[in-house]
Image (tube, rainbow, N blue to C red; front, side, top):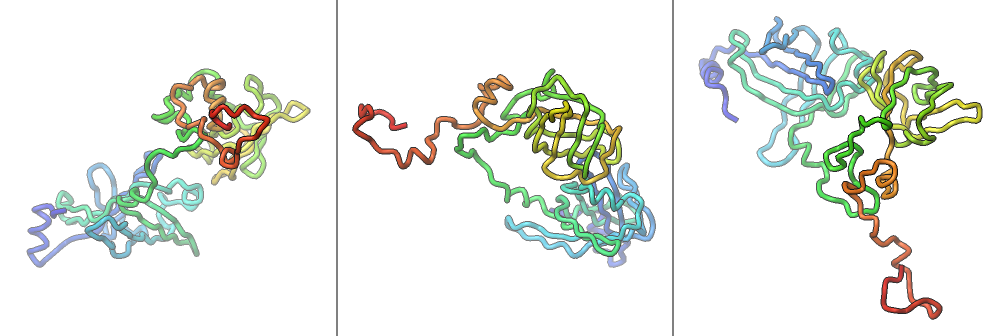
Length: 295
């Protein structure tokens, strides 16, 4: 990637006024800017703050398909980088862009790195964030998987089902919560038991707003209490009074797609693939040995 003409001429002059700038855009839309210059810089509409304790290691780049690596180091001194947000995972997978900028004319800048945040490690009031280059996405397996269950995610492009349809989404206020993982309601009718099993819970208010969790179990107790259990605790505080949105669950089975969602035309599995028992099948004298399938 070639340098901006103005920045290239500035670097060739021998007397440079350059700094590095980072911008982080979280998945919830919040954008943060940082710089190692001693004064704040504004790139477009984003204020990049100085003296935030953020720095970066050297960028390791290659010309092939190898993943570019970089680490951002920082201390939790800037008000925009809160320890509770890191714990809640709000910075996981956030988009990161790093520039080399002429701080006397910020229009003269060049992208040094573009990627996303990977693993974040914290210790002693500081954090280290692994930054992954764009080629990281090439490590994700692609292509169809030939299996009996559906390989689509409920509501995605391949599934095509509208999860916001009446009867498949419920909005409720939290009444009781235990260990940020088990939620209970004294009265929660209108949906069959296990309707939300394998579904998704989205938090719409409170300290955990914007976070979501996958539902492990949905059941009624003898006293009429409904209990929904998540696979993992929410990574931020969840308490009574918070607003939730629950989406119906799908176990990827052929019959579930047909009868629960009426979406059989978009089923992405192969329900007629023979199972392991078929491999050991053999003809017997009592059976109909017509030359047909042994299933």
